[in-house]
Amino acid sequence: LHNNRTKKAFISAGGFHLKLGVTCSNENECLTKKTVVNQTAESFLLMDSSKFNEVNTCFFAKPTDFDHIITDNNITDTYKQELSNYDTQIHYV
View 1 (tube, rainbow, N blue to C red):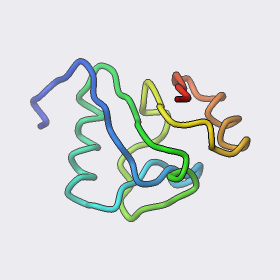
View 2 (view 1 turned 180 degrees about the vertical axis):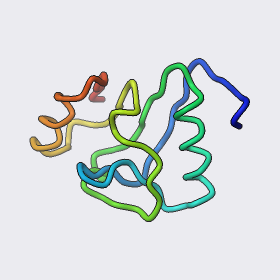
View 3 (view 1 turned 30 degrees about the horizontal axis):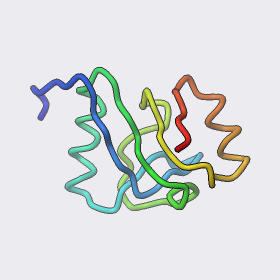
View 4 (view 1 turned 90 degrees about the vertical axis):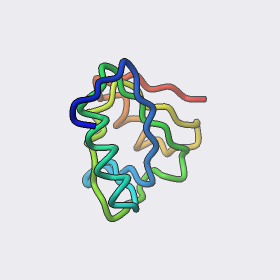
C-alpha cells in the first residue's frame, strides 16, 4: 500500500473524538486506513452521528487529515461547531 496512490479514498471510522481523534477497533484495518489517508489526493471520512464522541482502540488520523467529512445531521452542536472550525469540507446527508 505504501507505493499505491489514489485520486480519492472513502474511509469509515468507528470513533471520532475531539481530543483522541479518529479511531477504529480493528488494528489491521487501522494500519491500512492510516496508510490510505496518507497516500491519496483527496480523502473522505464517512461516519454516522453515533460515532461522534466514541473512542475505539486504534488511532489512525486526526480529523483535519481529511479533505471531506460526510455524516448525518444528528451530531451535537458542540461537534458541528468544532467541525466548522476545520479546513475540511463538511457534508451533512
